[in-house]
Amino acid sequence: MTTASTRHTILVTGGAGGLGLAMARLFHERGHRVIVCARTESALEDAASEMPGAVAIRADVSVAADREALMAQATTEGLDILVNNAAISRAHDYVNDYTLEVDRAEAEIATNLTAPIELTRLFLLSRRVGGRDATPASIVNVGTPGALFPLEANPLYCVTKAGLRMFTLALRRQLAATPVRVIEVFPPALDTGLARDLDNPHMDANGEEVILRGRELRGRDPARRRSRPAAPRRVRHVRAVRTEGRG
Ligand SMILES: NC(=O)c1ccc[n+]([C@@H]2O[C@H](COP(=O)([O-])OP(=O)(O)OC[C@H]3O[C@@H](n4cnc5c(N)ncnc54)[C@H](OP(=O)(O)O)[C@@H]3O)[C@@H](O)[C@H]2O)c1
Image 1 (cartoon, rainbow, N blue to C red):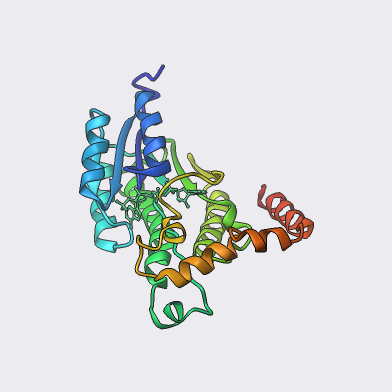
Image 2 (cartoon, rainbow, N blue to C red):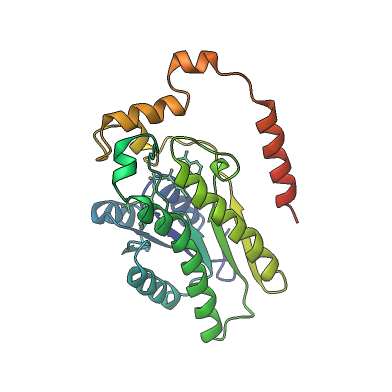
């Protein structure tokens, strides 16, 4: 049972949908104070109405001013756990004209990499300024197996998540002597809205061609899947990375 001393105030970015909402629900059920942010008002309203007492904030974490405002409000609420969950994943096919002609890298880098780094900085700064350096806190970064090996259809997702992983590992070492724990979560493949860009040509302005090529690259084309050889070398590589990641 959660008591006043074990009750945390937890900010979940992207907490109005997908995995973020699932985590927020769990925290809420367990009696913690939950703050969620997202860009879509209707999703925030739904999340707030199903979790009485939760704070729902409209914020685009890829925008610096939104991050500042979000963290100012969250720290006022007594934030002690930051969950960097919000992310996007887009198809980028570097043999396709659309990918070559349209600059779409920045939003993904800003959302998946700049945002968690900057929210972490703002969180740690707020603790210092507020004289709360000595109180326990946690930073939870949501990773993905795509940080460990390339997903050909969505390379920037892998790039940003690999970067986040290195940030997480280095930060954990830097904060080892402080009361701030740095946690990395590695969810398996989930049936959420994340991969809609790869699944549904009408959800994104990519055009059907890049979507179909993305499916093929992800092994959804049965002919390609049949001819694909097993990849023991890749498995060994993943194991090696996991081993290095410890400590
Ligand atoms: N799905 C998988 O298979 C899988 C596997 C491994 C790891 N993960 C990780 O799990 C985390 C959650 O993914 P998910 O599958 O739950 O994705 P999702 O269903 O697409 O949910 C992502 C959430 O983030 C919000 N969001 C996106 N961009 C945002 C921004 N710029 N500012 C604020 N909120 C933003 C979205 O709401 P708005 O659009 O309203 O802003 C949405 O609520 C991600 O870090 C992802 O990398 C997912």
